[in-house]
Image 1 (cartoon, rainbow, N blue to C red):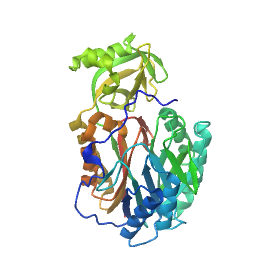
Image 2 (image 1 turned 180 degrees about the vertical axis):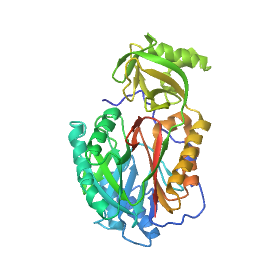
Image 3 (image 1 turned 135 degrees about the horizontal axis):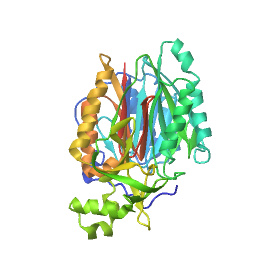
Image 4 (image 1 turned 90 degrees about the vertical axis):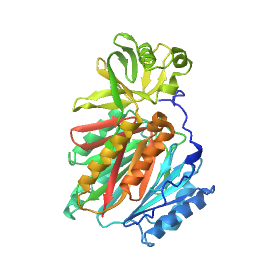
Length: 426
């Protein structure tokens, strides 16, 4: 799939540049973050890595996340991080187009390092390459070295396995989730997984992964998180379904007709009823794609539609979505409302803390869709701040263009405008 020029560019308000959103102290036990916006990639890696390790009382981490914004060369960043944390420390390096954040700061441009040290977890990782050429082969390469350790980890008392994935380039998310489920089920259908896709391009020129001393484009990273207790995973989107329509003519990810009429005409009428002028819609329909999205019902969760964002309008009046839609299925016209989206975040955090029970949280991995920024504008940062305030632990957070999750066997989820997170505990 080529990069779709109709996708709005991401920008930042003046107040978001390196903004400190809280002055409260962060007491770290098991996970620590460090940041740097030094223009030198190597120096930024050294500074961010050093800051993270110092918060861990200079203990050698079990695993290190390194995330850079666009504009940085990932390889020297990783070298700088390893210079600070130890060259033999397991790590993943991620370069993303989107927004990076930790527990008290947004980073429109910079480097974020999160170092994890905990006896409550064991980690394993692997990477599959050339996913754009052979997705099945890439997934096997990414998953099998991690899954093969599951039985041995169980014998050590680490009963549960959750898989965390990052893919730098785009693929069909529904196919991805189905393929991942098949690989996982060969070992244990109770294994959960979640992750994100960083770009819409089939082979991204902007995003990249770095694992085991190799830089990869067109890859998928898999980290196995083995634990003694069930993983605490939260998720949601909070977009509001308004009007159901029937997708009467579909070609893959393009809806040509809704209720036997050109899809764009139906969508345009819907926007006019929302108070938007027809002239404004015709002039630039892409400005409304973030706020008004599409929902595809999930048979297992009929009241929780899968969100699909439109990425363009075809010459024939079809609407191109970032995900497939079954023909003759019901498609909901959805609206992004700030109050409901933030309520979804708050409720999910509360429910996930119930899974933590009496265990002590030490950190969190947070994946947020960049489309929530396109929906909310600068109000998006209020939503991120809710994660920061309510989780109140060190955070490694970044935005993605698509998210996928299987918290339990019957729920296979692929969204374009959602959030997901895992709370790590002591």
